Length: 150
Image 1 (cartoon, one colour):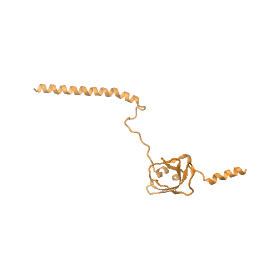
Image 2: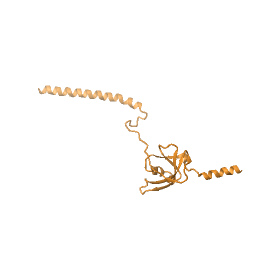
Image 3: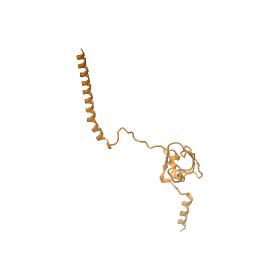
Image 4: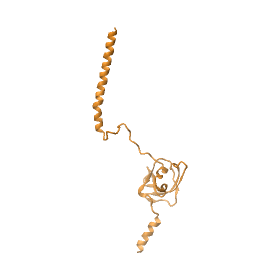
């Protein structure tokens, strides 16, 4: 009786071992094909892509000269609207604060007086490089008048 139980136990482990062996063979054959399809075999294919972190206005301005004073910034979902930053008040932590600026629509100044910018702490701000450090309208018209007079 004991001998038959031992034979059954040995036959079960052999079948389980054969099953594991066949699964290992399948994994080994499929692994090189998966690695060949990836462009960079050294990187882990399971690793998720890193998303670009969204920043609030203060976090964007801190990397610009003079904390972004005179530079244009806009929310990422705005089309053709931006603020030229004129004043920033920082809180003690350096990541939050208040900001004032002049509204620009389609690159042209839409208001003369600066106003407080709402939504400064929302994480959707971007820097607009091609509109930065614009010159006032009075200095642009003066050289044009000299050219006409000459």
